[in-house]
Image (cartoon, rainbow, N blue to C red):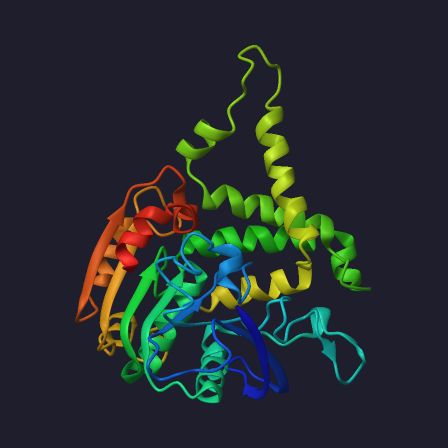
Length: 333
């Protein structure tokens, strides 16, 4: 994938303005060509704009989303430390990273960024819009805001509005960040690292299922005194996120951004908003997903005029959207 970037001004829904926000994106070709089908992927919370990096069994040469035969686009969401304007970026007023001074973003603030990249690349029609998890929040929001652009949308392991359960998990993660004294001190991007490790471990627990932990993290010694294996796994998950360059301030901001997910805000409610989508839509739920249970997905999928609803079986819970690639490939064909 080929990296690009633009700079845009964004008036923020929660107030304030980013006058010169950098937006990083990746594409599969140097230049858009109208004869190539466009596949636009919206990434999830801690991913980046290179889907070959985090979805390698789905995106790439010879894969279902073939980067030779399609013009694949993914934009790094505002607030992410992987290139786009975020708390890790330099505040032009201070010459230092924004950290806690970065303004609050909403998911709706991503739409101007998507539109700016789309127009910059010269794309008029998107053949497949794909969003999973919080990437699905962005995809649904965009499909409602600009329904004329899309031919087929895939909303996977996601929802058009945040549930109280998801909101509770995010608040728990923010509390973990706030409990680290170095987070509030905000002396540099390393602040809050211990809190971020804890927050990430909490998040992973919600991403996986009871069944998954039983299959993968059970003790091999039946007589062990303490649950060392699963404890090591949780700590590893926290360490891994910090080691790959994520900072606590961007994570905190992104948790707030996810909290804003409500496609019905100012549009007469969720059902009315989803009724605006006029493309074909595939909604995918995972039977063990405790964040987005299938019974919830079946209801709101029914509010989209041309939607089909599919449930896939997985031991992995919510993370099935990353791991059940064979089943997802069959749907995305």
